[in-house]
Image 1 (tube, rainbow, N blue to C red):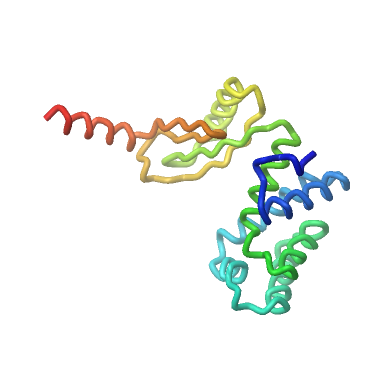
Image 2 (cartoon, rainbow, N blue to C red; image 1 turned 180 degrees about the vertical axis):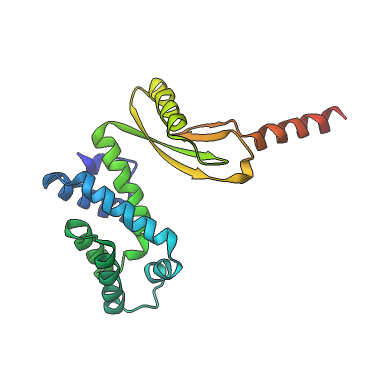
Length: 186
C-alpha cells in the first residue's frame, strides 16, 4: 500500500516506507511520528547534532555512540531509536530530515489527512489556528495538519501551501504588487 505512494521516493522514501510499515504493523504509528518530530526538534536546536548527522567525517561507530547518547537523553527508544541506529549503521543518517518528511506524508495519507505549510509573520493563537484548519478542511474535505513557520519578513498576513496550491496573502507580496503597478504607471 504505502510503497505505491508517489510522494515518497528515493532512499528517504524507501526508509520511511519500511519504518511506516513496521510501525503500522505494531500499531505505534503516532508514537514513532512523535519520536521523529522530537528528534527533528533536536536537530533544529543543536548545530552540533546537525553537524554529526550531516558530516561524513565522523566514523560510523563514533556517530553511532553519539547518536545513542542523544537518543537516551531525549527519551527516544523502541522502533524509532532502532531505526535511527540502522540509518547510522548504513551511513544514511544524513537523509534523516527527508525520511522524517516522507514518514509524515505516509502517516497523513494513512489517516486521510492533508498537510499545509503555513508561513506567518508572528505566532498564531490557538483560535486562529483552529479557524485556519476549519477553512482548509472545507476546501480539501480532509483534516489538515499544519506545519507553521514564523517569518517576520512577510510583515503580515500568511502564505499557505497545500499540495500544489499556494495562497500568498502576505503584506510583503501586496506591497510588492503595488510597487510594480506604480512603476508601470509612472
